[in-house]
Image (cartoon, rainbow, N blue to C red; front, top):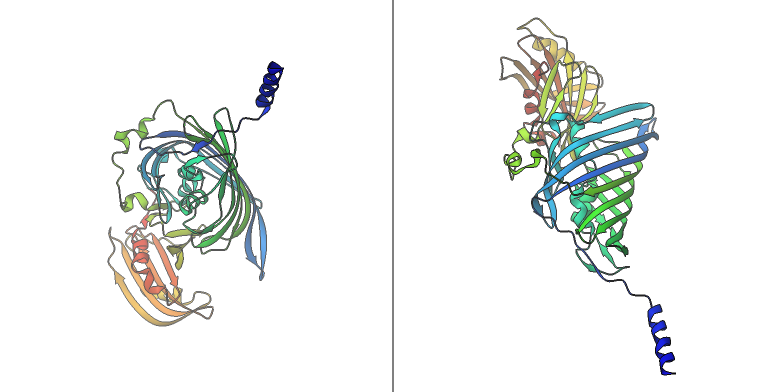
Length: 437
C-alpha cells in the first residue's frame, strides 16, 4: 500500500509543468565589437500631394537591400553611438506612379561612419563627400544601433513587459526628435536558448521638420548564450505630415534584419583604418554634400542644411532648414555661356530679375559686386518686395567664370527669416565650381 501511494505521488509530481526559468534580456555594447547585418525593406503606400485645391494620393512602392559589417567605435547611454560600417551592398528602388528610380552606393563610398547624436543620425564617408541620394541610402535604413535598447536590460519572465526609452525609440524610428512614444516590449517564449520577444505601440516624432506618427508591430529573437538579438521583423504604419522638403505620405513598411558574427574583420574596419576619424565636431570636409549638374556644367559642395527639392535641365531648387525650421529657398539657374572673360551686364541682369513672373520689387537693400575666388565675377542684388502679393526678401546673384560660364542664384525668404540666413546663401554661391571634376 505504501509503495502504491509513493508511486501515485511520483506520477502526479511528474505531470506538473516545469515553470520557465527567468531570462536575462541584456545586450551589452562593447567597443570594437563587430557584427554583420542583412537588412531588407518592403514599402507600399501613397504620397499625398496638393492638387487643384485638394489632396491627391500617388501610389508609392519601394524596396531596399543593405548588407554590411559594422564595428562599434563609441557607446553612449548603453547604445552604440558611433559605428563604422563597410557596405558590400546598398541599393534602393522606388516606383512613384509610373516613374521608377534606382539608387546605389558607389564603390569608393562603401565605408560609412554612423554617429548618433541628440538631433538624429549623422552618416558620412571618410573617403569623401556623399551626395544627397547616397546620404539617404545609408541614413534612412533601419539603424541597428537601437538593438540593445529594444530589450529591458534585466532578468525577466515570460509574459513580462517593458517600456522602450525615448532614446531607443528615436534611434529605432529614425526620428530627429521624439514627441511621445508608447513602444512596449514583451517576452513571449524561451526555447533551446532562444528568447522570442515583441515590440508594439505607437511613436510620434520629427524628421526634417515634419511630424511622423508610427504604429509599430515587431518581433525578434535573442540568443541567450551570445547575448545578442539575432533577428528582427519590424512592421510599421507611417503617417507623415507635409514638411518643407517632403510631401505628406501614408505608407506601410516591413523591415527584416538578420545578424551574424563575422569570422574575420575587414581591413577597412581595422584600428589603423579608422584612426583618422575625428571625435567631436566634424570638419566640413566630412559633412558637406556634393551636387553635380546633370550635364556637368557646374558642381558644388554644400552644407547638409540645404536640401534639394527639385531639379530640371536648367534649374536646381534647394531649401534651407535650420533644425527643421524652413528658412529660405534657393534656385540655381544655368544661363547661356558667353565668350571667355565676358558676362551679362549688371543692367541686363537687373532687367531680367525685375521681370520675373509674380515678382514686384520694392526697396533695394544691397546692390554691388562682391569678391569671388578663382578669377570669377560675382554680383549681388538684394531687394524687398512681394511675390504673388506675399512679402518676401529676395537676393539675386550672378556668378560668372573666366571661361564665360554663368549661373544665377535666387534666394527667397520671408522678411522675418531673412536675417536667419546669415552668410549661408553667399557660402552656397561661392561653393559653385564650373565644369565637372
